[in-house]
View 1: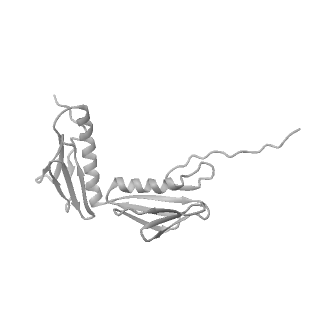
View 2 (view 1 turned 135 degrees about the vertical axis):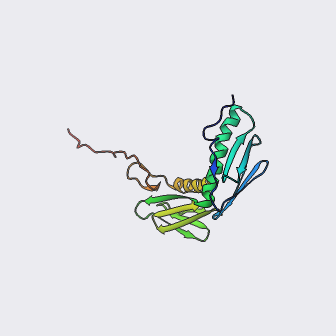
View 3 (view 1 turned 180 degrees about the vertical axis):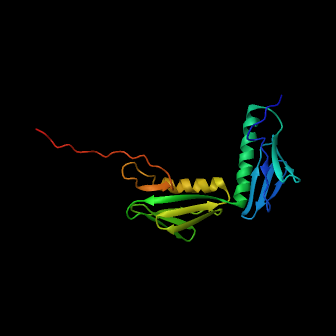
Length: 187
């Protein structure tokens, strides 16, 4: 009896306008928002069912490693399909008086209360928007690169727990701590 990964065995719906090419170890997906490719593990293959407009991820064996890679490969391919159709985005907020962000050429300049501003080069596959100096939108078709660059921006000045100053994801809850309270010196 061959056990199947619950996530891995789910077929991936292929929306209209998306073209998937699966070779021996490479999967290429092309859509309205660009082209993405992935190199798959040799034990993992992708079969495209043109009649049902679905892609099915299959594995050659039943080892623990292949079972884990089966679900992972399916999730990565699904994220690629979403990326070339809808794209991904992360929103960040900057909290602090005088803090702000702006785009200069191909760099994101962050004024975060340090002596010199933090300058981050913007990757090719990522699009940055700064609608207000305290808001940053990171978008693109590659989920990993969008998330990685958003995390890099946040790492420039993570929010601190006392006043909440720093860069946080939109909607992120910052657990606050009470500051030191001074008690009158009694004699």
